[in-house]
Amino acid sequence: MSGPAGPEVRDERARRAGGAGVIPPARKGAPAPGAWLDAARRARLSVLPALAVILCLLGAWELYVDLGGVDPLVLPAPHAVLASLYDDRALLWSNFLVTAREIALGIVAAMAAGLAMAVVIHFSPTLRRALYPLLVASQAVPVPMLAPVLALWLGFGILPKVVVIALVSFFPVVVTTLAGFAAVDPELLRLMRTLDAGRLETFRRVELPAALPSVVTGTKIAIVVAVIGAVFAEWMSASSGLGYLFEQSIAQLLPARAFATTAVLCALSIGLFTLMTVAERRLLPWANQPKSEGDR
Image (cartoon, rainbow, N blue to C red; front, side):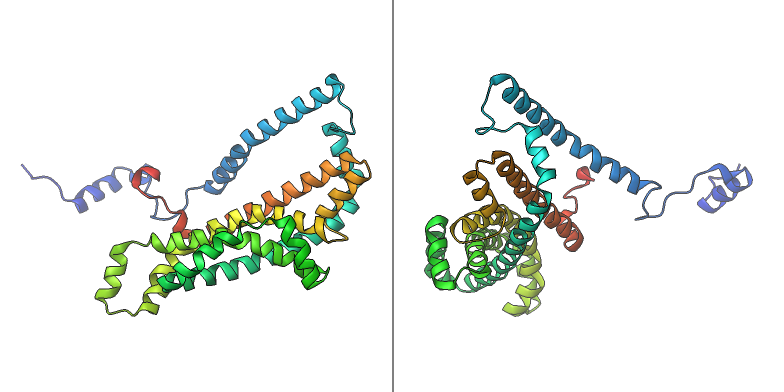
């Protein structure tokens, strides 16, 4: 009586017995057929709840205006706002480009200044104690008070708007970046010390990569604040932009156009936030890896 067959013998027997019907195991790391279709389908399905809520809110808004006898000068109906989005599309687009440019420049400035400030504070506890209270105090200054002063100092061009946006946006970048530096795995830091790595080497290889997801998180928060800062800056000193258009629409008793301007501002904020999310997944893949086997 022969003993149990080895793996080579079993494989040969399976081949001779018609092993062509056996499905070979998938290669490790190879995407399953149609995986990208499943991902696209999941992405579409994930949007459905938000769309359902928006449609319900718009329907309730429409019914309230139509059946409640609300003055359209006080609250225009959604169909009037949609009509304004189409009729005033050229005006909205030209002003959208102005505001989008201001926000893009302000966000870039806020990211650069916020990251630099966080690095300086991280390296020097003395500077942290000296500068951190000033950073907090800078966020307590109301933007409507700050924008006119900056306009007097810097003129009425794009520069004061960019400065306002950067000032109101860089604080979230500083705070989240510092939190990222503080959350670095202590075991990695001990490993770098064991390898006799210097302070700058440890920062470059361990601390900075670990804090980059926090930088992106702070930028996402800054994007929302930047839109608000841009509107306030344009209210104070501007002749174009979505904030300026909103103010002019209210003054001219065109509430539908004012609401359409607000809708464009919301779309701009959502679009920038989504863009940062996609950039994070592309540029920082390690920040989106599952934490455990159960999450995969």
